Length: 323
Ligand code: NDP
Ligand code: GDP
Image 1 (cartoon, rainbow, N blue to C red):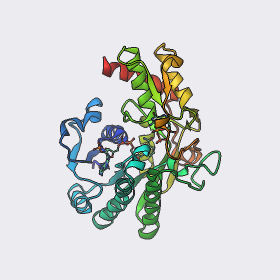
Image 2: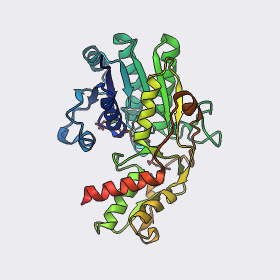
Image 3: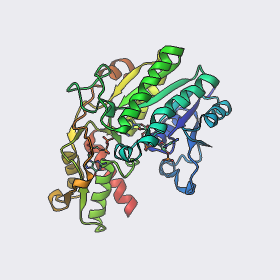
């Protein structure tokens, strides 16, 4: 019989790619959608992938536990993927309480609903490499101590530990994926990779002349969302729930990532890039570099798409969009 998946954050980048993957595997895919006055555009990513009519939307919000209970009663999922979050680090200083309510307590709301309604389902929590923050080890793995550097990262740390705690307290099949930055043509435009590829495409098409960025010395371990959602699914197919770092094992500066985009468009970066002090953060995560050895040995997971391939795909997609 076909399995049923329930995804929070279905309208986000990872939600869209995960839905596509699960549909290909024959799942019934359901997911939470926030009511909005612009509901005609909140399924844009699913439309981009051509799957908007193959998934079931359920109105709801991670802060509304009674709604989550009723939803799980209706849907009866076999697998729950908690991808919903206020996910942008910079906004989390502007909205720390909202970030805590959704990104931290929202996890407990969903775990509670699951414990009450479908305790035997399997649960995935979208944890983040931002939890390592001010890194305590050069290469971060599942045993590296955390040191969060933003309200977002602090909220994600709570979400991570409450997932571990529900697994240990109630024997629930709850796994936490510590995913390093992952991008795609469906990445939100406020994140640096997409801001760069959209900016480069605009300059190429004569719609803009400059690209303003903050700290271009920051380094990230960037992978592709399409690769990373496979790891989420693989985690829930394990007999025993566990936590995994998902990363590429390569770290690159924002500057060098940016160069790939400008070079692909045959533009000179120095002619267009402007450093704007207003875009620096109150506290920075200087460098992240993940060690995905456990995911490789236990899940058989490895990334397939390189940073260069991904940035080229993103620039081309932005040129197509603007065209
Ligand atoms: P997005 O920002 O693209 O998507 C976030 C999703 O959460 C959207 O569907 C959004 O809905 C939804 N959402 C926001 N607030 C609520 C709420 N109150 N109730 C229910 N849903 C809500 O993020 P990504 O797809 O990139 O990331 C998926 C998850 O993985 C997030 O939890 C993120 O923090 C985490 N993560 C992401 C990484 C990355 O590099 N992409 C790295 C590590 C972790 P709407 O469309 O209405 O805004
Ligand atoms: P994050 O790692 O989740 O915060 O992902 P982002 O893509 O938002 O940021 C990655 C890095 O790029 C951070 O170190 C930012 O400080 C840096 N960065 C530099 N300029 C910008 C910018 O204009 N926008 C964003 N979002 N990040 C920038």
